[in-house]
Length: 121
Image (cartoon, rainbow, N blue to C red; front, side):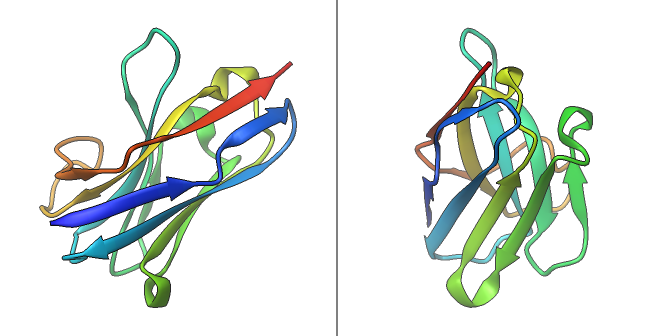
């Protein structure tokens, strides 16, 4: 089992920045760690992912150049740095861990509880 706890959400004005954190505990071996979001009234969508061993990163087109995923293996923590935030980034953001290889946008095995990000215009 892997436990994931997100933090760092909040209210920010458009153009501002936030950094989300995801602390992992338990059986922390995973192939990938990712961030997803669920805007109000919409389905959950992929945002970003990276291989836990380091190196490869993946982003959905709408956040490329604005969001950065990173990790601190010593702290078992994954971050999502969000810059130039837009009202359309408003969502509940979830951290997730995937224990298998393959498409980083799907089939995650463990999920955090989510953290709310609200971007005001």
